[in-house]
Image (cartoon, rainbow, N blue to C red; front, side, top):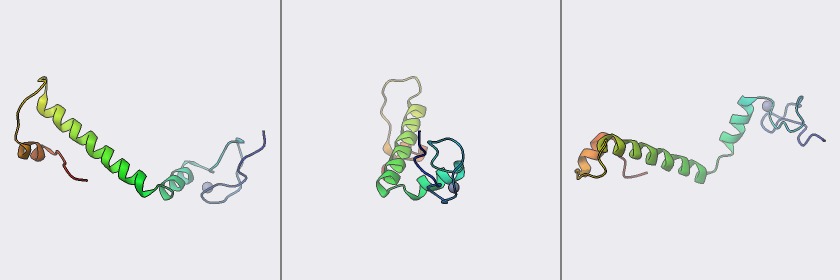
Length: 84
Ligand SMILES: [Zn+2]
């Protein structure tokens, strides 16, 4: 199988090693993906992080209960986030 990329996609250094290699090391791979992340991907990651944190707050507050009434202010004080 022919090599798909002759040079690292991040630093352009000549690649040696596996034929399917795209980056010379993990540092270049991470930097390449960080630079090429779109605004949409960044927004999605930020929203997912908020949703996961909110889920944890609700789990902590609910404990073993299936439902309960609680003031929104108390949830926000526990770390619940309502905006991005
Ligand atoms: Zn590189």
